[in-house]
Image (cartoon, rainbow, N blue to C red; front, top):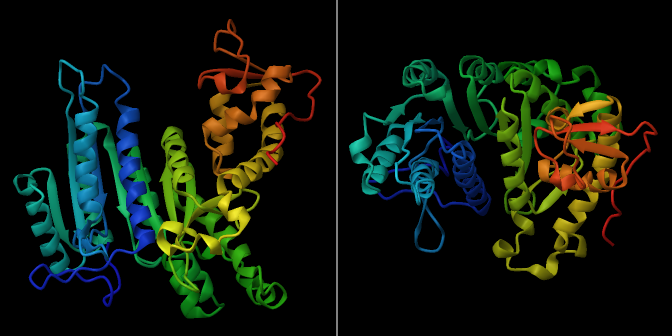
Amino acid sequence: MAKDDEKYRWDWVTQTFPTIDPHSKIKHQIIDEYIQTYIDVLMRNQLMPELGLSIVDGFSGGGIYHDGLGGHHFGSPVIALEAIQASEVRNNIGRLKHRPIRSQHYFIDVKRTNIDCLHTVLAARGHSARFGNDVHLHTAEFTQALPVIANNLRSFGKGERVLFLLDQYGYADVPFPKVKWIFEHFSNAEVLLTFNVDFLVAYLADRQANRQAIANIGLDHHIPWDMLRYLKAHNPRNWQYLIQRYLSEGILQESGAKYMTVFFIRPLGNNPMAYWFIHLANNYRANDVMKAIHWKYGNNFSHLLSPSCFFGYDANRDVGVTGQPDLLCAEEHRFDEVTDSRIRGELSELLPKQVFEVERRPFMQLMSGLTNYTMADEARVKQALNVAVANGDLQAVDKDGKSRRRKGTSIKSTDILIASPQKTFFFLPPSKR
């Protein structure tokens, strides 16, 4: 990740590496787990002879950090390479015929010293034989390197499965027209993008320079410039939250992706600026996999993007980081339970309209319509349908209409939902108390 000059510098000769922050460790864990889960899902097809996958790390950095404990922590290039290696081993256990994962890796950073450091780190990890074959290092800005890399990716083929890791420092290095270009040119692309939303909003003002900065990333039409002064004056505590809603809707529209998840990450500190860790994809299953991972690592929630309750990671509420569990209030101790209660409330608003406005609806059509408006993954939506299916307010049958499910959690992806003629209003189980 190409970062600011002061903190994020790599130089192998002088052993100059940044110290990894707790919030960045969580981000790396999500990347690692997502790559491995992504591969597991694709390789469930036992007849697939091999899997092709490309990783483009647009802000790679030097590949290594001090961990603050006297040791080292490896960055996203090493994480991606070794997540794929681990996945190949795991998915071939017990098989007579080996199924390889054919991967291509492109690591890009604007600073030569960073790339030189990454080269040494990868070589030390045993990857030197791959340089120039399936591991490629570039000293360039991501947007400048993208056209050449795109041509190479298309030549590689393999279903055009490409995961772009775009861990920019601020918000201006990856304009959304470029993200849209990615989705237009790669049928199976996904993007993991960091977006420093608090920094953008904190300094937002109706001035030409500021307008131009937002225009440069393609979001200027999504800012209510004519209302900005009024919002600041009359909603001093909430105007930033309102702007975040406009930005999130704009990002989804301008990215060209069908599905988006937003996971906020708040660094440790008294007044830290939070950023968004955004996953963009055109594949519903990819979106659902990422949501399930977000549930695992989330420790705080927000209604800033209401009506969709969303959540993220706050280092200040991580007992493993602060060492001060006594500072956490009761609600924070019960994150899972409280969030479950909130998600039930959210689904009670979203599901009735989605289910009952059409007499017969494929379950996957329901999920596709919901996914950008709720943090609930597929498993939680099925749980929310348990009572309705059990008491007959809603029928779930297989695609041939021969088998009927007895509970929501038994619903298959290919099932059809049939609304009751009485259209009883709704059916969510009571929240825990």
